[in-house]
Length: 511
Image (cartoon, rainbow, N blue to C red; front, top):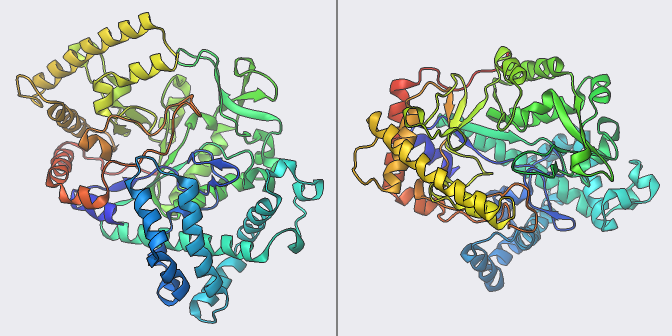
């Protein structure tokens, strides 16, 4: 809420996030926002506990939060460079369970609202039963007894209090996100949400909708110059014929879950509307094959839901994408992405390649080094350390990066965006942002961490245990961000540049 207000004051139209979906933060443990338990439910980790109305009336919860051990642990969390999701969620859950216990015994209007909410959402009841059963079983659903694997859950299979907890926290999360979306709209800075490609194989969606997913198959990517052995992403892909026979019901539910609150929705790996690389169980990623989907039908579904919810749709089309896919995106009004650090050119005349009209433009993504790290070649250092490139290739890449940096500086000088003879990194960043803001893309995203020259990325693709992905805490909290007037002034300059040169406003809904 604070971020959207601050961004709106700088002129922002949207504020973007990574996926906010439910995650496994205990057993199993996977904090990746792109491996959610479900694409139909939110992550209670993000619930603001002190904003819950029951908090003021729950003596036990307030006593716990104000206790010395609780405050000491919270202080240690805030001081750490890395987020310990497991410990933090366990601590937050203690408070949420106290609030839930107090709430279920109440007989007021909020309790009646909650009962109406849960009664109208049978999927929520099934989700809560699934999560509660998994907690009792202590293992993934694929290892449950046959009756449970097949969806035949009974009241005796789990703790009723745990079911109530999962229903309650979903109601809280949905209500707080609804309120945030309303406040954001009032401040003219809507939400930009992210719909991931897949779900965790041990998650609710695959258990609940087994007919919609291909069994004993994993989605991934074939070998390329960055990943010579290909990539196995570990999730079960949706089955093109089975979801079609079901009228794309599950996919529509996923879209509606996000579009209720999103002004803009990013579709992860948009190529999956056309095709997806399938890897049979027991085979290497090099031995997979592409399987086609009914893309026109996917586009039709997107267009209908986008129009109904007045949500613009962005397709993540980075990397090697066949021309016909981008042509289809353009035909259906689906905006693509332009990432400057991918598009820099060693030729000074066009060091920043033209931006396609109607696209979403940014300097980088969460899978890349922020601008400062890229400028200093830390991404090359990372690739060498991970064994993705050899020392000779790394040396050559560093030489090319130096030439590229010279070309970018010359280009920005010629465009009048850079004037200093020996510009600082901050001045080069500002010049790149202003150059990007002066183009006719439909939407421009600014990575908040770029503004303070962060060097480390959130995720290193192709790594699991080698890097602490998704766990790095932002260097500054909102209090420090709001206190730094230079950050606000830079965004305001970007906004003024956009107003002068970008007539399209926000991205449009697809056709």
